[in-house]
Length: 551
Ligand code: F6P
Image (cartoon, protein in one colour):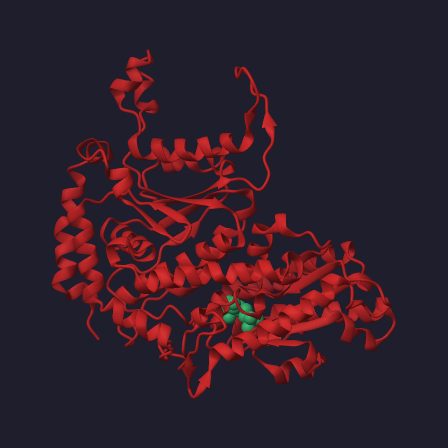
């Protein structure tokens, strides 16, 4: 396969690197009064403002050529078609099929996967209605008012993030808890809060072998059997979401209580599958369907829009520009929406498990950076924590701001110095817009001095500016918008991987740690050491730990 960094298109982008050092965002905006509008693209309901990026038209055109050199349209078509593009696992990558409308058809390996998807959706919908209406009861006949989703990685982060994003829609009196960590503190705290008689447990695991999930699921089952007094209670209180019917049966969950998905859905791409069951239970089937429609809207945008107006393609090209050509190593995602508080964590798995690769699809070493470190917190909290580094630190950290125009709920606030009440949502959004401005345009020494600042202090108060950001503005935090946001980043990841020639759909790096945890567990519990021993650091840590545990 072609190493993208050896192409003339790569060299053309490289040649343009010095040109961006010669201009500032202030100058680019001054030279083009329409820049803000011209560089905003609409994708579904999202306005994606890319104007505050360190690019000129020439640079964007060169980056777009890079996408063509990597045959992005052909690679994209292969994914949507169901080709086995996850070559190391010999699998199709079809999360986009999870949100195709019921009247679509996609035949892969002689099966219409859309029919399979909608059959499961129909079962999920029926089950959710029964639970939400009170027709489905617990073992003692009580109505279900609590859900515990037990899962980790994609079987946790997607549902917990969407659940929080849609919490304004939880009107059926059902709340969900999410247990993921094998740290017993996680499960104990949840079990202490819930009543087993009114709780439904969703065991969510693609493989149904993940250590953390299995440990939590077994411990929860024991707790429920003890509390409800019979093994028979399991049928009324446990359901599973998995691809592994045999393992679900071995656990003791009947086929009727299992919701299937397929090996062509990667864990971190699985929230629009049955893995989203807990969301359907809390927010209701119509909200879940609207979420899927949102995903599909963005899929269509990605599949059909020209690169110049294609939001995920442009965002991916900018990521490549910053990481491969300007040396950025991380990206901050700051939702100015408390309900999106888990979105940065969700994106960490989506982007870093997908792009954390050092070899290309053909096994050859990459010679350029692949993914960036994603991180973030909701605004305005982040402003009072880490924004100082974004504004005046020495690193280049592109930021994605996410803002919502119409709030789910608003409150009046009275601020010192303000004559009347102000909307707290307006205050939140004013902060978002202010931050992106200050990052981009900064404050010069002359401007600082003009404020009457002591010249000795002036260098400390100068804001360098020229710090890039995207602002994504959505009309409201509806289920459709949440689906669009997730799919937007899924396709950003796809595009980065396609151009860089890496596999965004495997995660072999996670496996070795899992295997070694098994060996270490034996060493912690019984005094068995492999021969030769682990290493002097681990040996001594194991010894200190065993001593502390009185072993
Ligand atoms: O962390 C590795 C991983 O395989 C993720 O990709 C996945 O989302 C998570 O573990 C959970 O896997 P499962 O759904 O099979 O329990």
